[in-house]
Image (cartoon, rainbow, N blue to C red; front, side, top):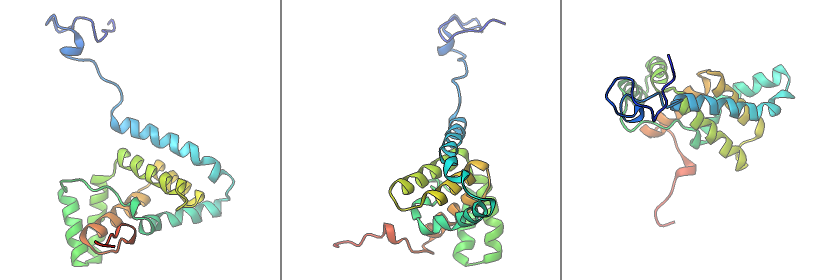
Length: 180
């Protein structure tokens, strides 16, 4: 079968151009582009991690979950309309039911986790690093964790976002007092 270009007549027989009729695939979607961005970002931080020993790398990766707690800009961007899994997580966090939080968090992460969200979080990590608020090694470890597909950084980020959303944590860097 010959390739039809966008400006060729559509093979469906309508007589219209392909781009205005049945259309050809437009190329990579947002998730594919976010995955490519994550790959590029992890390649850019590899030199920072390359000189570390296995023990040092493990220690850096163990610190990844605490980063969203220390930097509220690493909280996961919550959707405008909450899916039921996120509503359930919010409810159990407000009820302070630790056992239920674990189950609800797993379900919420499964629904919210995406390459686009991971790429957004990686860009936030780089902004903190470039602004001097985060050292290069922990930033590189978090970006590597995000690119690896591990749920560790995403889970910590979603947890922090929900805590902020329900008012269960202080957010001193975003606190603005009227009249000060």
